[in-house]
Length: 371
Ligand code: GN1
Ligand code: MG
Image (cartoon, rainbow, N blue to C red; front, side, top):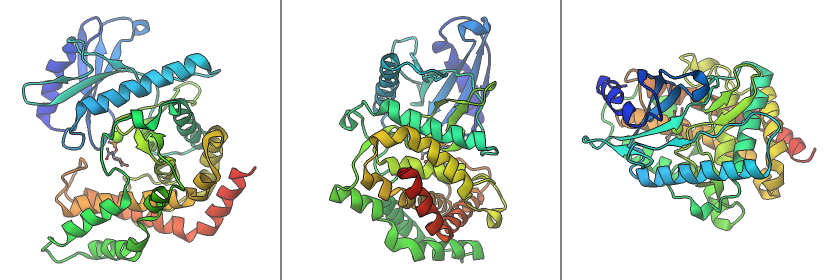
């Protein structure tokens, strides 16, 4: 994170504070796109003595009105759904905290966009390490999707056109790779060959959508493990955060992203990419918990494309990381110039492991869809 962002956050935070004095403003979490801060206030914990401050990455999300409009629509829909059908266990809504002007975000004099979100006491993990966590990840996604299904998809803006449209990422990759001059390293050659071998399969979900086999629904868009919050005492899922990508999409994007993230025991940041594998036992636990909540709104056609979603979204993320590496790391935050290459290798290895277990995964999905 840029030191200036950290400095400016301390100046911006007071403009959002609901009450009390600010004690500290510190970088928080491990997001790859926005800059996130935890703000601590000098009031009793029972009055909410923390909140989240974020600087929205406007290179990625150029339309903050659309992003915040969707976020409001989504959090309000969840509140209504919970009022109508109260839950027996803890579930929280990441409410927007308005700026002192009354607006949902603030644009500073440098054009940077800031927003604040209520802090939810919960633990975030970067990878799953127990069956309970796997179960809670599936539950969390299923619960989140169920709560927002009352929103007509057309009420949500497209905050990030092209997001999860794999053929568009392939086209971007082809453009970027054509401009690369330096001789490829063995890892780069490996990635290029991996993509080349799968280029003809990138349109499967989009074709199914165009044919009307699959339909758009409100989705989370980014339900990876660390966007799930777990209750620190019970270990149960309490919410999904990071709502910028809530928009109309295929539930397959969500299932794919959730599984590629939840079934990779080494996590997406590992340097040991050759040891990466997709854990089918975990997939079974996550999918069962997810489907127990999602089955009522899924169609048989949705079920038929679940395996494809898992394989394709894993491949797509590798493609996105690799393209960003070739383009000079302009999209994802990186620690060093090779970071996105390592991340791409991890996703491609995971994708290869999914493909190697295709038969097993497909029959697993089949049995979970028709218990
Ligand atoms: C980005 O910002 P973050 O870390 O929640 C990205 C996701 C990727 C993810 C990979 C808007 O999410 O699509 O799956 O990195 N978000 C956007 O870690 O591109
Ligand atoms: Mg995100």
